[in-house]
Length: 103
Image 1 (tube, rainbow, N blue to C red):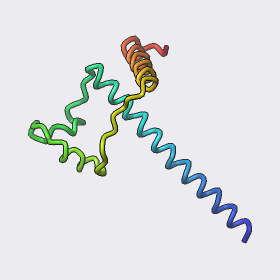
Image 2: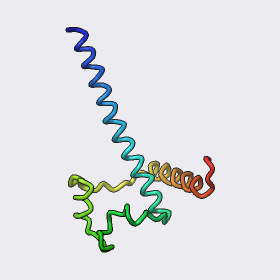
Image 3: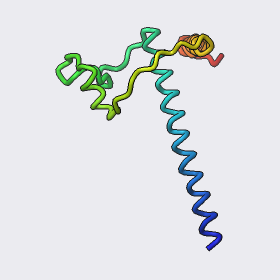
Image 4: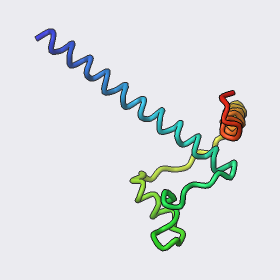
């Protein structure tokens, strides 16, 4: 019985770690996506959820439903340090994309 508790505990930690990594990975993808948008990099039209099948713009609510997003209020980022980090990452990632070299 003691072993099943340990095994269950390890499994719980593993599942929890997977959830945490999923959140981190999702946030990283969002940062990269926003960097590409800020730099004017285009998304393939067939992947662009902002357009419907007729090429017409969808409203924000339709897009949020497609992405199964919950309603949450937007938080304005006012951190100077976070902005410096974001800008540095943006410059680095864009330079790597443009030169095909890892900086």
